[in-house]
Length: 95
Length: 397
Image (cartoon, rainbow over all chains, first blue to last red; front, side):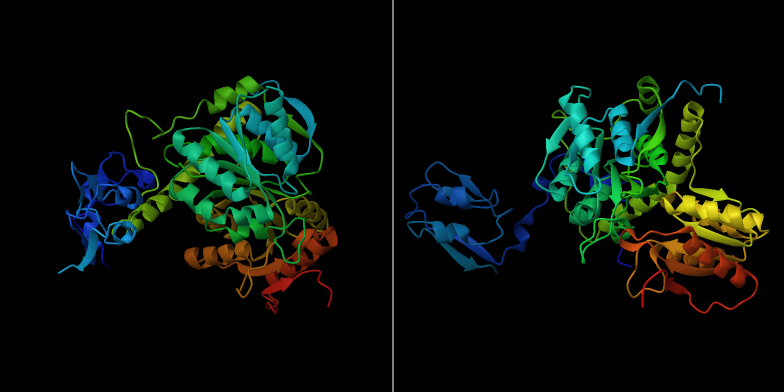
């Protein structure tokens, strides 16, 4: 019936689907959903951080001279590329 | 019975009795939105807050959806929580009802039952609660203000029990109970405090131990959490029984899953919920004097449905007429009768079952109406075939 035998059963799970230990968002790498990958042209980046503000996920990290992408969590929505005033971010097909 | 201690009788309507029970339960949070016929309940409770008679945080909200949402958050934080609604308000809460049960928040909610629109109507039937029948809450139906008071008190102890941890509704018929004044025998505040204690949350808000509530579960986990809710419903009846026993020791009043009147040797029984049970007993008593073997079964505990116990009690009864106060459009029976019919299938009892739907939108159900149901049940018990398995009683052609 599609039950995954290796996972805990209802008698051992915390009731109400409470996550009693924090950190699951860090453990679960959600970047695997991505169809398009943001790529930075570092020469054009002014480190204005608009992309960092607009990113709906914590997928843009503040670097020293330019921003960096966290591909573990980036879902490829492209908002950063749309908002970038210097067109420093381009979306490329994931292979 | 030794501990049954001083109680006083106070003139209250059903709404006031429930508000008084919530006050005595020393609830931490009330988030509620007034709606006819529950309004007095919220008004009385705000009086308690304004007069400094309670320490409760009263959250004023803009809708019932927000009311129950605030209750869910408060309950998750570890508070004892109470709210109340009716009809359209309950319908607006519908999605949050499932959050409350799925997140296992032991919220206690009184529902002053009222018909659903359209056409708009403010009077009593059970279509509001029946519309949310499968929401995963324990559901109690009270017959009068006394029962509404008693069940509200017990509800906190039942819902907050760690074997249960389910939200719970106490239903009282709009106007018929909510606005009818009666002498309600109440416990002293100290006795209620001793009975209920303080809520001991299983989890709760704790900055040193952060937890996630309301996380997403995908197909690989969702069923397991629904199975837990089934288990909680299964574990509720013994807790309800234990709380009822404890409540009887201090109050002298006995509660259970169902209440029977002359059912033991009856051949025809009327099954119903709420205020209509009083009328049914009066009629049954009169028919008994005429030598007719009739009885009344009032269902207090609609969810979890006491299937096995009802089957035992009905095992020698030849025919039951089940009264529903809501239409389940397109279904073979109304909701209560569906459960009685399922009880028959699951347990193999031979009792014949028919359904009468009446008292919609506050239409008065008179003794003569109930007598018709008994007469039909007696004819059926005597061997007459059932021509109309479901009928709407007292509707003009």
